[in-house]
Image (cartoon, rainbow, N blue to C red; front, top):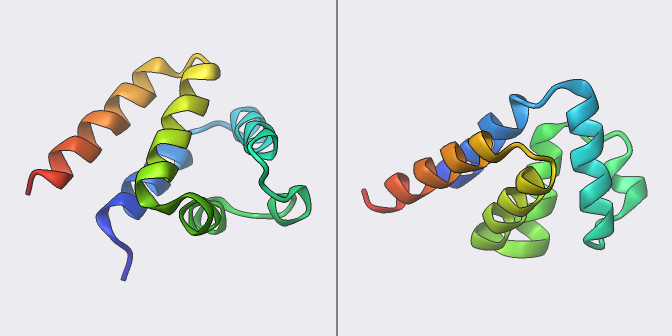
Length: 89
C-alpha cells in the first residue's frame, strides 16, 4: 500500500503536462538520478526512485524545488500544504 506522501507526490506529478514532465525529468537528472532509469519511467516509478534515493522528506523537498524552478509555484504550494496537513493527522 502506498503511503500518503507517495500518493501526494504521484497526484502532483500526474498534473504535469507532457512537456512539463520532460522538464521535470531533466531536472531530476541534474540531481544525480540515472538518465537511463528515468528515460522510460512513469510517474509511479519516478516517485519510487525519488523516495529510494532521497527518502520521503527529501523527495517532497526535491519535488517542491523542481516545481518552483519550473515556475509551477501554485502546484508547489498545493503539494506543500497537502503534505503538511497529512503529517498533522
